[in-house]
Length: 470
Ligand SMILES: [Fe+2]
Image 1 (cartoon, rainbow, N blue to C red):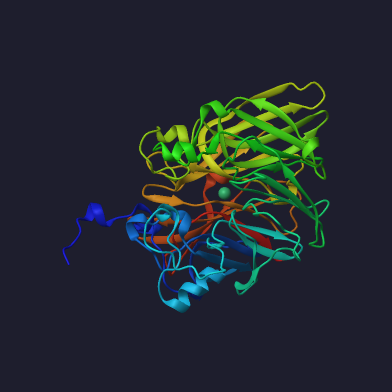
Image 2 (cartoon, rainbow, N blue to C red):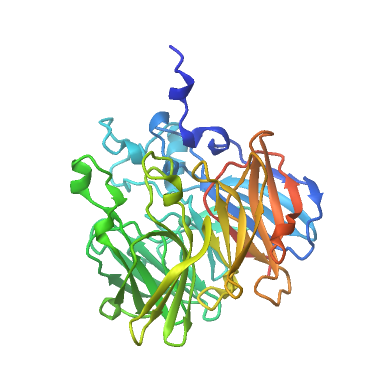
């Protein structure tokens, strides 16, 4: 067989530290620079695409990869690492067969006959995107699919759930858990009606409320927000349009004319109760938090001018900086209808996180990954934005070092909102060495208090999570 030229052999999302790892492993007594804090107790989790059986390498898309969880369990100043595949039905089917069954996002129109068995769902539940922890249950999430229950500490897959038959719609990778009420709000979007559905799961894990949410046409709605009283939906202009695809454009693409509107509905409201507010046109992939402030509801998110969703930021055309978000805030006055909106910081960032114990209530701080200015999907560092002083502090990982999402882990016994650590995986591309960094969230500019030198490569992935030991 003729050898392909390197330029043809490389798929961005199979190359370098985007490439998958084959083995599931365990490690203890890892080399540490600095000292792992004794008051960091719980599980740091990172999920991402880790494909095993690929239909065609050149057509592989990062959104196709089987979910793999990389986890570090912290206790008494020590760390233990595990990585495990999420054993979804689709993963198991391909393992049994020893070959691909699902063709993937870029190959939907490929004439090769599908191998999906009759009666099985045509799409794989990849469980590769993000986590939720609610009612003492850890879920690995994939937005077209049902949540997959994962057991700690061993990361065993217990299976997908439909909440005793009550979940009738796709389940977002970014549900919101209000720790004060114990409720988890979620939604799902679809390309057929209802385009959006919304549900509330109560503190004992029972799905108790569902309503459709009417919007004009299907959109990519990756995230939403919830305050103490309201749930907010983002009808923003990454639209799904078959006619545009037939005309040679993207099926899922930016459509300026669609505009942007935020729907505000009481937490247990219904479709008719949604109030839609027109805002300046932009794109939001991830929100940070929302809260109520008198007559106003406040939303903070990462917002960009446009987006390249299917290209995952690697597509030609739009300037990279136009597709990379910046921290942005909307204040919606529910009494007068007045909207105040604007940039909070000039820095390009996404994968916005807060102290999850404060979700749906007023937060002072947002943490976010600082975008790599040259390449999509990795971060040069991390930032902390302070709403009170309207300023940010940053820490950058250094030359040839790129990181993923930094999650906030509250210190054991924490009193203040930012009393804790930011934990993330970073990869040194020159040394081909992965590390887990632990940064004091009250002084991120000081850099890590500990860096765990990973004995195995940890590929770049999607979202991270933290489950406290208590
Ligand atoms: Fe996400």
